[in-house]
Image 1 (tube, rainbow, N blue to C red):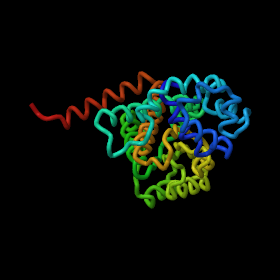
Image 2 (image 1 turned 90 degrees about the horizontal axis):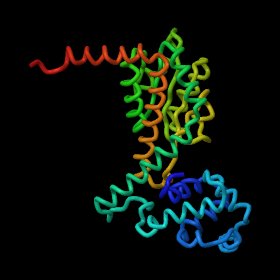
Image 3 (image 1 turned 180 degrees about the vertical axis):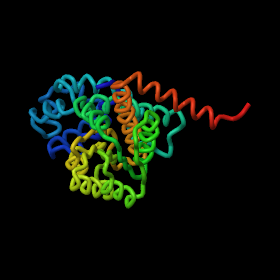
Image 4 (image 1 turned 90 degrees about the vertical axis):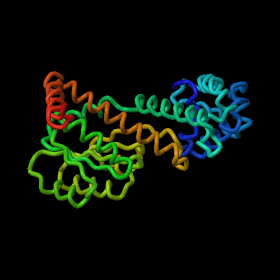
Length: 287
């Protein structure tokens, strides 16, 4: 847990928490400056939840217990005063916006990095190595991530099919004779088109890799490999969530790309150099 992010983490975690933990989380957010001075018995009495719930809540935040929670809340006390962890508002000045976005981006990168499972990342790279074709799909902001993925992997010689046309994608999915893998990107994991494509792929024995922040989503459950990014901002705060989810996805794709690059490092670096030279030769302005 990095400094100044505990309040964001609590706000996010209570969305899917039990009733008792939600009650506790909401009490802590309203009384963040006072809680570091409480004993576990004090907090139990004031919030109306058991001491066991407090300990469990703290550990679910990745802390070693209530003492750890108090330390993090004390570190974040300045943010409570400034409202730095609050949602972006129309009254924020430029410096306030900068501080809020930096905090959210740092938090997103930290929680995403800690949450990405090395085993699943390596299994993803294994799948890409074995596949002749990578089919990739993302809708809306997730399509930007799919474009970034396509640009990266195409430059090192991978055959990537990327389109927002679901009919065309499904046609490729059902008719390709080459060994293929399907990489689907959806922050919510509930995008109708994405889930439908995942189901069709499974019926046709095509491996599905899902990139989502929602471990309980349909995409996560359907996928053979589920890569979970950070869900660091409550979904009702769509202005911040749109930014942080995109950053989280781009970070995960970058990490997968570099892991792939390492497997055959010298060969892949040569391909990158060749593609750069070709672009420079044919598309750079003539002197």
